[in-house]
Amino acid sequence: MEQQIAIIKQWLGTGSVNVFGLPFSGKDTVGIRLAELLGAKFLSSGLILRAAEKEDSNLAKELSAGNLAPTQTFRNVILPYFGREELANAPLVLSSVGRWEGEEFPVMEAAKSANHEIKAVVLLNISEEDAQNRWDVAKTLGDRGDRSDDREKTVLENRIKEFREKTMPVIETYRKMGILLPVQATGTREEVFANVIEALAKLAQA
Image (cartoon, rainbow, N blue to C red):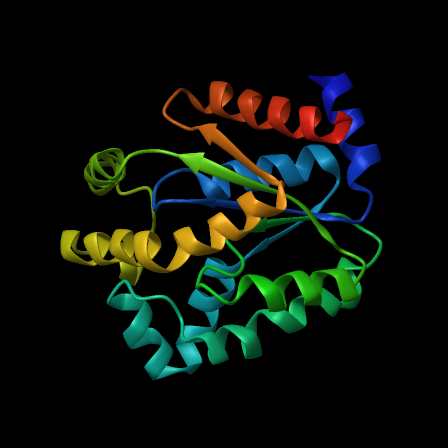
C-alpha cells in the first residue's frame, strides 16, 4: 500500500478527491484516514454545515429533517473554504462537497481556482438496506454523537431519498467526466480502505 500511496500523492499534487456515498457508507471514516496518509486537509460539508446550523435556525430545520442544505446556503458557507490560507499548497480530501444537482459545477470551479482541482470522485457503494441496518447498529452503540439528522428512522429515510434524487445526478456528472471510482463499501474498514487506495492508484497510473 505504501507504494500505491506514493503514486497517488505524486499524481494528486494539490488536487482534491471528493468522497460520496449514502448515509452510513463511511465517507468521513475513509476521508479522514485518506487525508492523513496523503498529507491532505480534510473538508467535510456535513461537519461545516452542522457547525453553521447553530447560528442559522432555517438551516438547522432543513438538516434535522434530513434535507440537503439549500444551494445558496451551500455556496455561501462551503465554497469560500477552498480559498482559505490554511488549505493552500496541500491536497484536499472532500466528504460529499456539492451534493445537490448543479452544485458540482461551482464546486469544481472553486476548487480549480484555488489550485485544488478535483481529480477523482470516490463513490462508496452500499445498499439502502445496508444504510438502514447501519443506522440501527449506530443507535445501539450510540457512537455518532447527538446529530439531529440521525435521531429518527424517518429522517434517515429522507436523507436516503435526497441522495437518490439529488445527489445521484451529481455522481453521474463525474462518471461522464471519467473520474468516478465506485468502490464496494460493505466489507471491513480495512478492506474498504484498501479498495479505495487501489482504485485511486489505478486512476493515477491510467
